[in-house]
Amino acid sequence: MKHYILYICLVITTCCFSACTNDHTIAKRNIKRAKINSPLEEYVNRVAKRILIVSHNPSSHYIFSVTQDNTPLIEIDPQSNSIIISHGLLTNLLDEAELAAVLSLAIAKLNHNPDPDRSTLTNLAHAGYDPQALVDLQERYLLADPIHPTTWIVGLDSSTIDAGTVTYNKEMLKKLPHGLMRGTEQYQKQIGNL
Image (cartoon, rainbow, N blue to C red; front, side):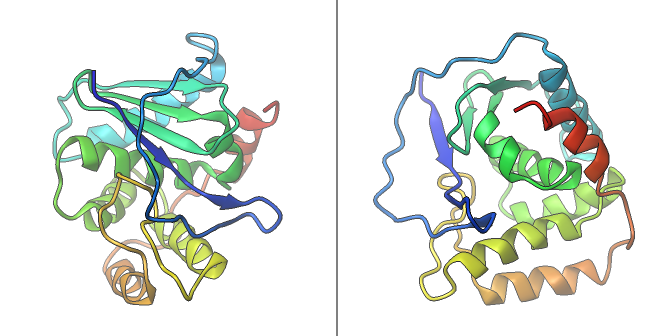
């Protein structure tokens, strides 16, 4: 079974994304899964389903689960249509809208969507989430290492995040609704015990 493991390298002290090197190896890992159907896993599934309903392929069946790994990562398995998100990643996101953005990017990868940023921004807005969340994640990444932009989430998005990408996405934001849900309080309640 082929697994793609995707790391989001984070600068913990600044809560910003750090630069990832291009020499990442994507390999199979043994990851301890969080308790099946835990409240946290149910929460991630609710957010994912909210995105799926408005996606280009809402009838697709996906499996979303949470691992107890403290490394910020997402694992995508196209053979089983599963997306596994780690505690480490959840603790480094700021709100439910950012979680929805990451899940939407993963769904776009599974659907082989050629323009994941555009579909993520649109899906976020259609699901009632503030699409600014994607741009916020990208800007934090750029602040971590503006000189050496590299792949943002290894294997999730083949393009690099640079100032031009963020500028383009900001232009797209102008065409989308403003002031939609960020879900900071709900998110913090759900991940508070991690």
